Length: 213
Image 1: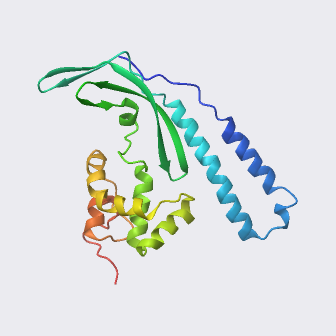
Image 2 (image 1 turned 120 degrees about the vertical axis):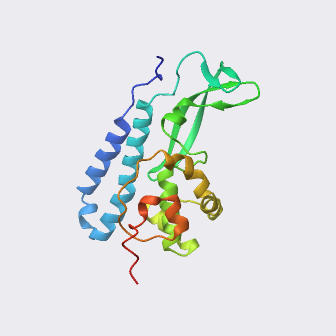
Image 3 (image 1 turned 135 degrees about the horizontal axis):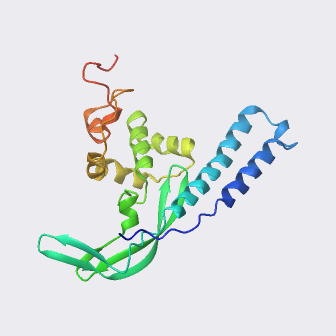
């Protein structure tokens, strides 16, 4: 069985960034700052460490190259996807934007297939499922425009109003296929409106535990 091609992941950028953060925290300048400023700057610098670590992890996952061709069994017979092409995809995550280099397989008259996208269960849009989940959660808990700022404050990721407007109505359709594959998780935490609870079922309380007034 063919396996995806993997490349050595360079974790040094994350290590360098962490070392710089560690040095800054011990610097004469930082030692003169009030705690709230330390918290704010450490959060920003720490996010970059997390982003670089995630980028290195994605390098470990390889590019999804499973061989010279991809053969799929379909209702009308076997389809051979023999045209290969490497491409780069940007994905905005809760840590920031990362890049994926992945192998695509295609054939005339059919959309391309990217094994790495499937292995990672990536959404069609450029925002990760976790970031989309947090956007929807913020939109439910806050006024519409405030939810964009809330996400920016919590993750450092800026999402446009237009993007949020597209994500919210499409969320149910976008998540359906993905979350049908998930095992049910214990229902705990805050009560959610049925429209949101259907998209993110694990956010809802059990039926015998109604929302508090």
